[in-house]
Length: 316
Image (cartoon, rainbow, N blue to C red; front, top):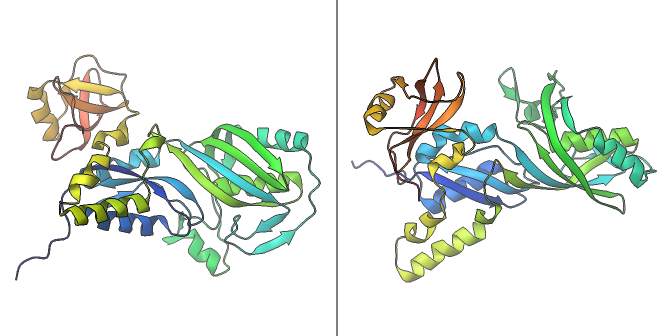
């Protein structure tokens, strides 16, 4: 019996503009089917309520998705004052209603307190795990478990609008920052409670916002390919960003082809002038700067591979 084909081998990153109302995994599966990809994974889940940039990695790019999980994020959020919910967003149940007695000056002073590095206790409605189970699984059973505070950094937070008990803000934050928790904490600072009613991720790392595509656009290209009787990949694959965009923030170390053989076999090499010891770097080869993986500077001038791209391809 012939083995059933699970998809095609394809490498790269697509920037999905995730719609509201579906989970990140649902969005991933839809995109994976559209591209008929053998292997795919997303980089940092968005709540069903949230929309915006969800980088999806295909094939070899999944090896480097952790770097996107660790990258900075940008969001635009609208919070409603006067109501606190059990999930800190409008998908939850209202657990407390209070009168709103807030002026703009008070609001701006409270928002300013979030700037910088602080400790944040993750929401019970998060995907973090406790004793092997996700926190939201406990929360749905009415069980609260201990959570360790996490260091987060809010690089910037700007008030865009304050009207009709709604607060619209723009934030630039470090990895692991829960915007719902910031909104809930802000509501408690103001003494009236608050929850998220709209959340949009506008940036991940340095990915270009203009390269985002919607599910509707992808499905339209799929339909167009069928109408023109051409392979869908001819219309879909040009949307992909190269695999090394997942590590675009890392400094580059370019090596000669002779050294690349050793790197691909997992051996460290003397790469000449390199960043300081312990620095993670993006490894490229030759004049074409062909990306082959990620390494770390391990001792004086020594470059050690960490994750190597099995089938290097030139950037599109």
